[in-house]
Image (cartoon, rainbow, N blue to C red; front, side, top):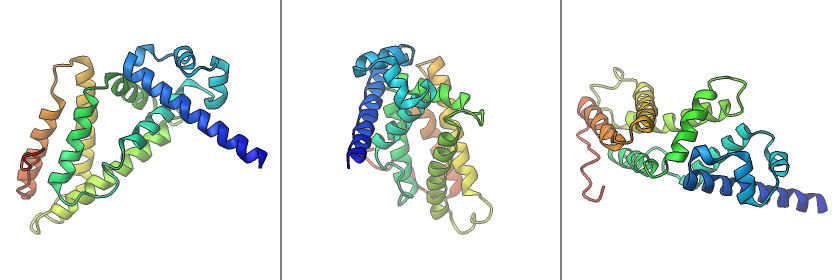
Length: 206
């Protein structure tokens, strides 16, 4: 029982550190998020922090995983229609404009994770597959009969994900870039091409 209690305490401490790290990156930016600074805010020594996570890369990978968990179930299952999926997606992108530190962390770590040996490599692969599969399932359900078989929903999902990543890179370089408007335009093109007649603008509350 003591061992189980110790494990639970350690897991709770890890979660607390991750939340503090998330807060530091959110409030102070990626550049300020050194292991030393995060340890200071979390009330732990640098050595103690690394005891829980091993490396800064492991820590940041878990921060991104926590951020996804806190985002909730925006893409937990295929949306009922394209409009619903698009509104959820645009909501996340619009939210990202308010957290540049986390966007920079995501962008930097995703590039580094191209190395199969990087701690975040599997995280990004699984994340892209999970979100991509959900987008593809929604697109597949929306395809008109005359397009089914001619349009690969997984490629549509790939284009959406690639466009989002590219827009985030451009936005980090130039904050005047309107990521939401750019994606709305892309979705309008998709809706017209797919013959769905659906637009994220259809919902007056969107």
